[in-house]
Length: 134
Image (cartoon, rainbow, N blue to C red; front, side, top):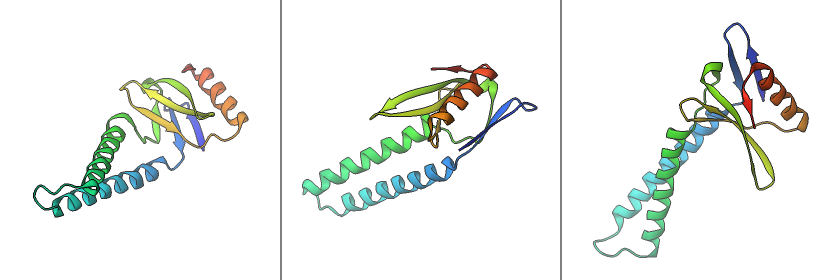
């Protein structure tokens, strides 16, 4: 991942291919929803069986995932500093995950932070800029 601070524009530029990943995930979730609707449409009147309940569950989870990504996530490549609230760090299953919390409440995930030196460098850069870190 390449995170650069652009002093002239007072912004941060992130090149990590996150937009492509979210487009693929969104496409797959929409495909799941479409498939669930078709399979539920094929069920005859009043004959909802276990497969029907599974398709209802898959469709509901897919709709929830699409809504979550649309409302809570962003894939901006260039983020002005005045839109960044803080660098958020959370630990899931023993791995540290980082994201930028924006003023509008959305999160910009930072996905390719591999080594400890990358993490230290990122935190130092944000502290130098004046962005709060966890």
